Length: 354
Image (cartoon, rainbow, N blue to C red):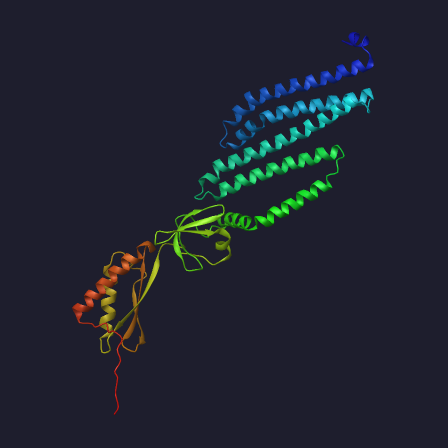
């Protein structure tokens, strides 16, 4: 080989060495790809997590291209250093192409890693949650990060060619500011939706009450809005930002129990001890009324037309509140009529003076 190179001119020898460098990089890249496919990937498939397998599968081709791009860049740099033709148009073009291919190769590897990580997160983490907000947000975040990576790569390439990017960056900044202002409410709702997922003040299936007084069961926590099914069987679509900044009552926490307070008036002259005993018996006889804490009755007020008592009892499941209240009220009416206890209506005595 050395004897053959003795008959080749110095420029030809440099070109031959540069070509050998590039061919060697292609061979190395091909060998690395074989090892990647037949050694690393089979080992990754045996592990408990899918993250390493997804990373290896996603980066196999980008790493192969990056190694060839690096060999091409190194070969061109060798030619520039040994030929000394810094002003040659051909070498300038080759140098620029080599630099572009190297930067793009790095960007491909970075985006492949990002894409595989977010794919793993969506498959193994976000898919196990009850709401699609985190899945939608993660997909959007992944796309944004990939765009940022390519934007940085484009900036590096333009800087290498001494292109003034200050105007480009200023334009991009103004454009992003305009987009942010135009989509201010949308972004606020998206961020609020993501915070609702992290903070978890309520989940799908919870019965909540909004600051406006509207109540219903959460059907879906979306990327921009939360959907609530009211008791009128109508769907309330509320922006996430409105929910995040106002008070929300979650009736499912800490559990499904609910306290019922009921005012009952009886006529003056009624035996209140007897009324209290009857009310407690009615509540204890109902299987859906909790025995612990026990139902209690308080004499609270001398009303204008009645003696008012407060009946307090607990129901195990708030979704049965109306059913249990109806049962208790019907039994109160029946027992009062059987015992001769009068529930008075408002009345006044009018005295006329002549």
